[in-house]
Image 1 (tube, each protein chain N blue to C red):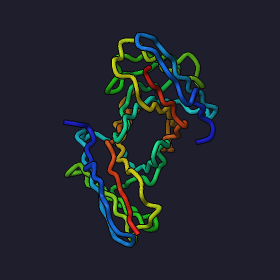
Image 2: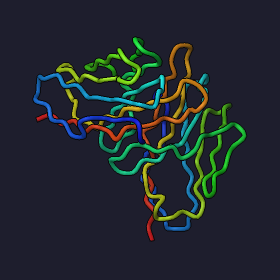
Image 3: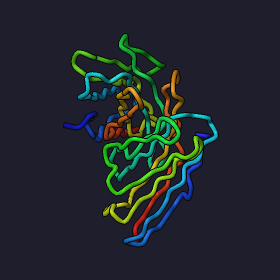
Image 4: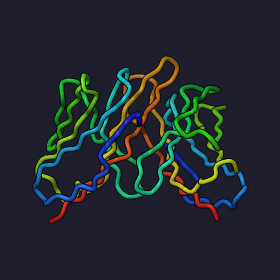
Length: 113
Length: 112
């Protein structure tokens, strides 16, 4: 969807390194989400944020961290504590009220070397 | 128990067939429900919202049964272009945040 930029599209990480995935939006949406998708699987919720300076753990938050210092940005850091980080990562946004539709970025494929 | 469960399939049906998917959810406080479609290695796209009264959009019909905590999607007169993974989505709205959970997806393949 237009208005959500995830970068980079492909990212490689050495074992033991932290890496940060970027998600920027210009839709003025309050809520932002990070999901992880493994091959043949659905999306699993990592973290989500309803407003600036506030975020909650999803179902698989261990080994990940986030920040929400600005409304437009919700970066995800994959730490060395995440033992199996290879996956497709999707960022999504949603207006606070009314329209329930999620708007997705095009995703980042993270691979461990 | 998973919060949202779907039959993973794959469903392999001939063009023109009618196919139905079900999805169950565990949290009775769930507020809203959706079906998304995902093509390989792409971001999911909203197919339709699901309302208590049931709703239809062309060849697609969605139903919600709150008492039994399941939602369904019916595709009539299936087309080759319907081949994709269909994701059931539940919004567990809470006081301070809106937790949105995806099912694991049902793969559909339409053959000529």
